[in-house]
Amino acid sequence: MDEVIERVGRQLRLLRRARGLTLAELASRAGCTDGYLANVEKGVTTPTLSSIATLAAVLGSDMTAFFPTKPREQVHIHRADELDHLRVAASGTETYTVLSARSVNPSFTGLLDEILPSPAGTSYSYFGERFLLMLDGTVELRIGSTAYPLGPGDSLHYSSHPDHLLRVTSATPATILWIVTPALL
Image 1 (cartoon, one colour):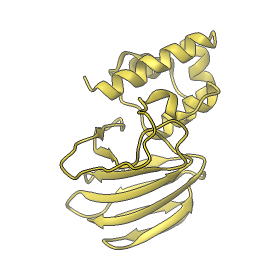
Image 2 (cartoon, one colour):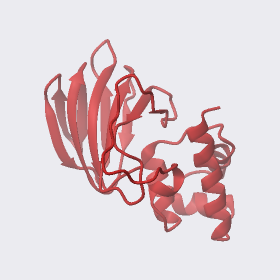
Image 3 (cartoon, one colour):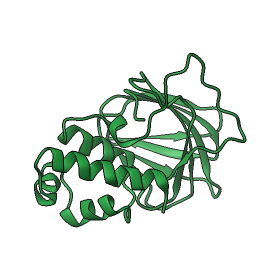
Image 4 (cartoon, one colour):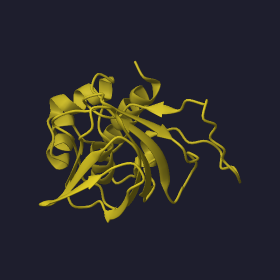
């Protein structure tokens, strides 16, 4: 089992219990099922970043409570051969590499996202802003009724609060550099 996903489940259980909520109460407030939350707490189900953001908001916390932080350094270097992957998508088709320092009170998160082609795509809703730079492959980002086809070198900056859907349209994985604010991790 992935260490990061186990930590998310443990932290969810601790926060839920600290607020005196049952699984059913938290599920109702977060708009999901208690079975889903039970599986997240056990580390059986991998939540999306959007789900973690929603749970954090309902619990009166922020997403950093779910992920380990490191002492704040003046300079953070991420070397290409250092793997710091997070798999936080229910389908397991996405792998994030955290590029920014995971420190207390960061102002943004930098992520390298590799997404395998999937006909369904991935739905997101998160309060804040996102900037994406397409590095490889092609995707379609749908915000409301407008579709934005994007390929290598294209970038997009948008408010990520409305529901939006990202679908890989190439036969190969898409690689995206994300800058997300407020910080996720």
